[in-house]
Length: 91
Image 1 (tube, rainbow, N blue to C red):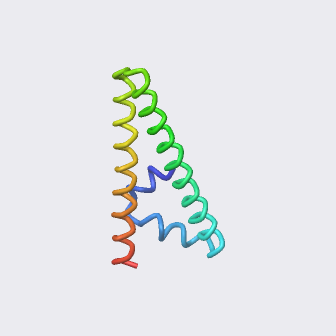
Image 2 (cartoon, one colour):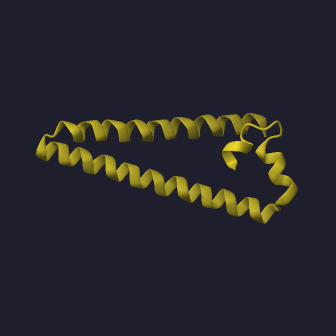
């Protein structure tokens, strides 16, 4: 449903304001922040484990996994920075 609403004319924020109150928005912000934090920890740990295993076993597949996971972490960082700067300017 969220994917469908992302391409509608009215924004998700304006649709959500009609049916939510401040407490619901606070809970959603808090839970999404925790999910992002947990995801960062899991991907970061997997990246370091893959890097350590590559150092031990010298399997090229582990290097590919490490580079991919690090790229995902950097992508998440750039998206968070971009969204933060956007919301600071527009809200």
